[in-house]
Length: 166
Length: 106
Image (tube, rainbow over all chains, first blue to last red; front, side, top):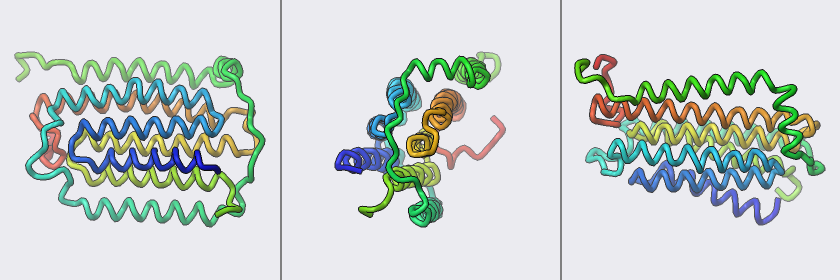
């Protein structure tokens, strides 16, 4: 774990924190993009090139744009008068802190048994393609059906209601 | 921490991002921010999958990497449907404030 890991981790965690803490929703979406970029860099650092670039394409290219569209379509950039945090924010914060405490405790307890530095796996996109068409062909088809259904569902749900229905 | 395996760092970062996402989903009023929190939690899980794939005993089997790729695809579908629902609710109730959305009936 070198300097690059700490730098990218700080970027990712900072982006995530800003995404949940900032008041203006457009700023939140931009901070979220930063967190996604940091995660993609962490994937690349873990020698998962394909997953890293898929992360950039899917999250920064599609999900972030979708979030910005949703914010602008719902006038989310206007600050609400009641504040941005819910009435039960303290309970939510305590639950999140407890979850982090348990996860961190588990990781640190398990640290001596975790595997040490491993050899860099050499995985090519060709290998991934062969695996996707061979061993993982059924999940691939199911994901294809799921994405089609989600696309149709999202369009139908967000479509204008008929005038007579109101 | 100097002798700790490199996996520990990645797992702690993933746990931190998961907790931040959970805090965002539980404490914000805006429905879109809740979806952002859920996306962060999904991404933290993906980071765990990739990290265990990298330092696991059989990285050439590609299991963890494939799981992460499928998880990215499912998360994209989830984001599309979730944001479609938020837009639909906004059109109906003129708000994205979760504390004002307390009726199932339109």
